[in-house]
Length: 132
Image 1 (cartoon, rainbow, N blue to C red):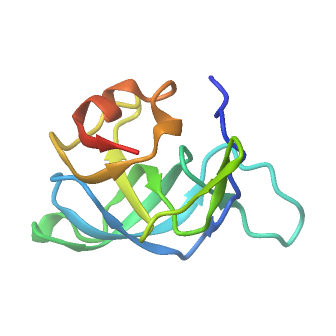
Image 2: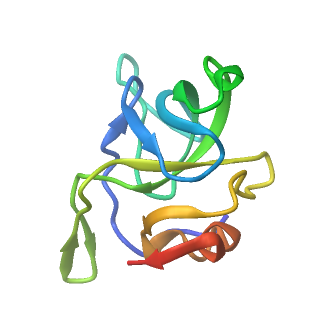
C-alpha cells in the first residue's frame, strides 16, 4: 500500500456521522469500524483522509439501503492537516462508498476530493469532478 504524501491527523473516530458524497444512494453514514487501525488500550481508533472505514448507513434515498454495513473511503475532513508548508482543511467530513477492491460504488462524486488519495485510489479520483 502506498503512503500518503501529507501528515494527516486522525480526526474521525467511531461514532462520527458524515455525508456520503457520491450517488450510490446513501446520504448520511456513521463510522462503526476503522481498517488497519493500530490503537492503544481504551483508545478509539481514528481515521483521516485516505482511510478506509466500515460505516452503517443512517439515511438514504433508497429505503432498502438503511442499516446496511458498507466500506467507505474518507475524501474530506474538517480537521486541518499539513501539505508541505501549508495547512489544508475542508468545510465538512465526507466519504464515498467503495467495494472490497477499492472501486467506487457510485458513478460520480458531488464535491471535491483531497489530492492525497490520488496515488492509492486512482479510480475514485477519476470519478471526482474536482481534486483539491
